[in-house]
Length: 615
Ligand SMILES: [Zn+2]
Image 1: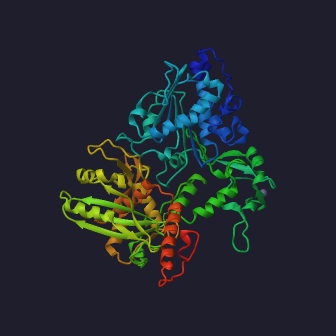
Image 2: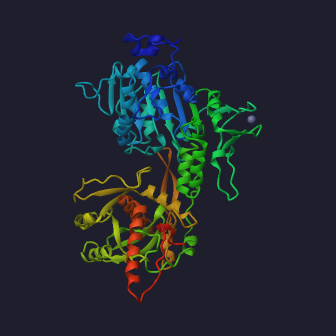
Image 3: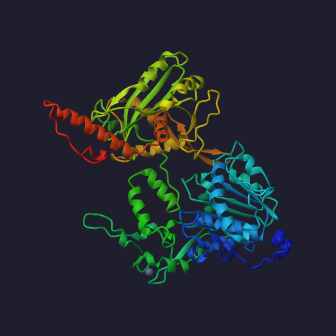
């Protein structure tokens, strides 16, 4: 027997008379208002708009026996809103200590300001319970909300202190695939947070995420251990219940092969009739969750792709258009599979083939090829030498390696630095005749830290920066610079694994265009051995699989310097179309000046865009 007093705890005591039948979805329909600030469809919340969320939210209701709810999802289906409705419900009707975990403290702050604050402001049922943070003694900050009978702690999975702070009855872990595998040496952040719920018999744990890579995805692991529910919807023609799967989304093609996405439809797995997406609203309303692996003691697990996104949010046509674009590029395809299908990406786990890359070297002469419009440099500093690469970048980050130099000499002496400086100041010639300089350079400060700081300090104005590698999974390719170092220089942290993912993904691209990497004929076998020196492996850390790059050959400098050259491009953050346009203008001027001289009458080829220069 459940005692209502125990069930509703503080909410009951403070004189509220909660309806024992009240579910989170009913509460949301009655009380939740969607803010203009954070919602595409402001106004009253209607569960019927996203009917698949009803069962998920109701598993989070106190009357449901489930303690753990897992939601593996695609983007734009309202997953975060389900969590917010649950938060609103507990604040209002079943208060208790609650913790909300986002991937980092930074994203936690953003989530609190952009998602939570507007919900509190626009939902009177809870705004009267949580004092505005500007009021004195409100007990409220961006990361802490106090209210009668409860407290809400918002923290990041990168903060062990935050995760250990208080015992909690409710735990909401959002975007768990973005969490570090190990938080400050204390192990898995989800486990660390879950330990805090230990003493509460009425606890609820909600784990939500878009999945990432197969074998490493937390949400997939959680889903696989759950009762594995899938949403089945009826065919409007034959009434057969089925999941909406990508393989059955069809669109016709024109004679020339152009996809006709206006006529996109879902093909029923039984009657094979084509179902256009205006039927979706009715199909979703009649849909039901089917557990594939029911069993006692299991978490309630839900999987839903963006193909279920309600009419007016993200259409099948839009998802298909994204797919057609994404399949040209491994990185884009990976993101598409994760965020649209809500599925993990299966990594081949292999090393790029150095022989293949060696065999496809090209002779593009001493000048910067037409497509390359921005130059960056990456440099790796050792006690006895500095290795540096200059890379030309074009539209879609297509790249051309221009040169790879090794400056020999002790890096505690001035001479080798002078050589590097001259190299960085050098003017390069674009094939159009326009001279260009290195726009940004990144120098690794991991080894010879003092010397690197001294070198970059007077050169930061020229965008010569010190960088430091971080192999934390999910670290952004370039983090915000910090000045908190002995040299007082701007130090950028580089997500080396993130950068290597980008580079290895691009080495798989076989045809010139976005992301493709070109190499000149002058490069030897050793260069390609170094570039492909690392392999993605699985390491077990405290019982959890962790994805890591492992050195398989003695040297990997070519890969390291490419990471820094790529980071320099990210720091530069240039509008490539604009840069290309400016370069084109300069090239035309040079060509004009030439033709004005009577003897050199070379015709000027006028084309609109730089990426067409090749034709
Ligand atoms: Zn049918």
